[in-house]
Image 1 (cartoon, helix red, strand yellow):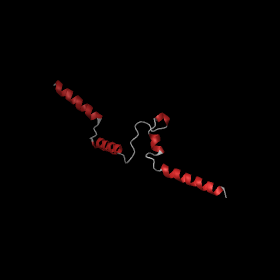
Image 2 (cartoon, one colour):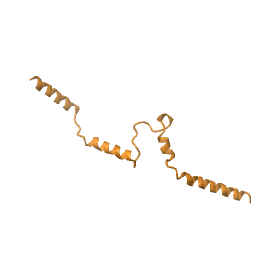
Image 3 (tube, helix red, strand yellow):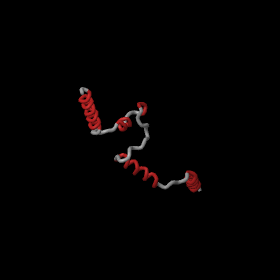
Image 4 (spheres, one colour):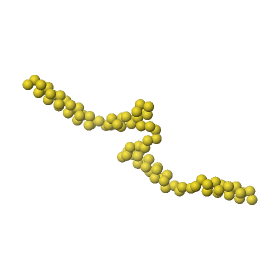
Length: 89
């Protein structure tokens, strides 16, 4: 008979702890991501998480970079050489 009320109290205490932890602003994974890389955090250069304003800005910058025309370096070198030849004439 004595075990039942104690077990019930522990069950309610455990449930209260679980419910209270759901009110946290950051998850454990988000806190670990903010740590330096040598402590187990994310390395430098990792894209931001989806759904954040930083992610939207990062995606916009990627789209802008992708929209730029791609030129061949050899063509650029030939054009530069042609300009130098024209200037010499």
